[in-house]
Length: 199
Ligand SMILES: [Zn+2]
Image (cartoon, rainbow, N blue to C red; front, side, top):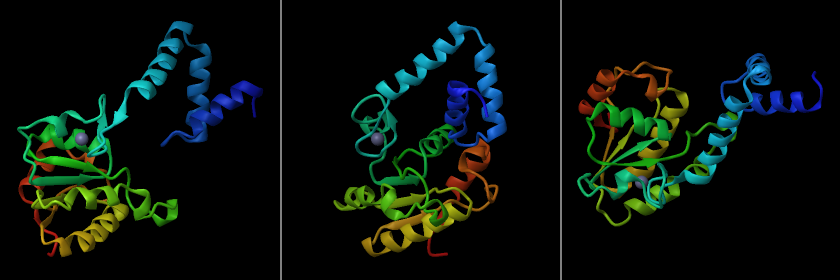
């Protein structure tokens, strides 16, 4: 345990995803020794990102305006919707250049251990989006791990009765990992080879 504010810093850093107590301590001491101008730049960008970056009111992608660039782009196919867990998955899929439809970002995956159920995700908004029948295919591109599978299974059950085509990415993605860790070629292939969620 450290003196007041230093411990506060370690505690705050330790709350970040993937930062354990050891790493939090290492980052805190790095910041203590760093040039004040460097730390100021980091603090500024942290505040700026919270002020300026919003979430798209349609798809929940990260956006600088009310609607994200993809939702505003008339060249994107409005009949195909790709459902992903996080914003970073949109980035990964965009890199493959394999997909020309639109997205829906759930904001996570179903994970009972972490207390995340369907009602914590943007599933209700997804159902509202699908209500007008403009979308004819939904691609479930959740992560190839337990939570991603559970989420895809849940969504398949919800979406099938709507009579649209529900597809999953082809196998070949590294199992247990995150979508974003797949290389572009592998992810692109998984997209091109997507199959009906019935299988
Ligand atoms: Zn959007």
